[in-house]
Image (cartoon, rainbow, N blue to C red):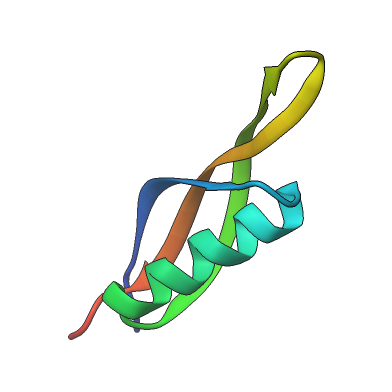
Length: 67
């Protein structure tokens, strides 16, 4: 039997939402053992002078606890 935990993270990118998600998962994988999945709670853009300058995502990441 395994037990999973969920933690919330935020990530950003100047390129795209996909890139922000990939950066967030890559960073989470460095500190959390056995990352198994994630779901996006919120997507947001930062706009300056009528142009999107940053893509931000808030995600919940699940990982397996060591036993």
